[in-house]
Length: 234
Image (cartoon, rainbow, N blue to C red; front, top):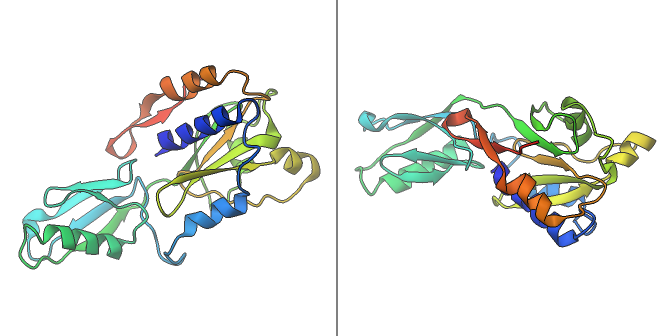
């Protein structure tokens, strides 16, 4: 998922040619896309959660599975199923429907056994690019401070805020953290799991170099949830 977000950041940089994020939608619009049709009072599954899937009348099919970084789980009676973004009951309904091809009158119960870390990735011109475990209400500036702050080369006024919407698509917006730092302007964005905060250099002078550094040279160094997630080579 984060690979897709970073690819989105790259494409945005290429299309801008020199400066990043000038023609992006406002952050309020991107935040609204996160909510989708599911009520905020309902817990939505995310990558890293560990689930117990129970078949009350077919116990041999019971399984404990993690939600992979791509948002899916795998069961022997259904194959891959998109789990991220659903409620536990919503996922149970999907599993019930798909497993009915192989089981007679299946009943399915999904229990969230372990809630995974809620993390965002902070990259670009920051001191220690990497993952940050987020707390409720965390802002992009707080996430940047958690990885050591900005480098001198950072363009604080053109920080990219990249988030995955309820439809699974990534969108990006520009946030002006220079205004926040200089004038104390309140931040609008509140981060949620799997968001990306990318701080560009003053100018993206060479799009080819940008692509190579942040896309082609990604290394899978994180083995959470039984799979890998990429971190750019500094």
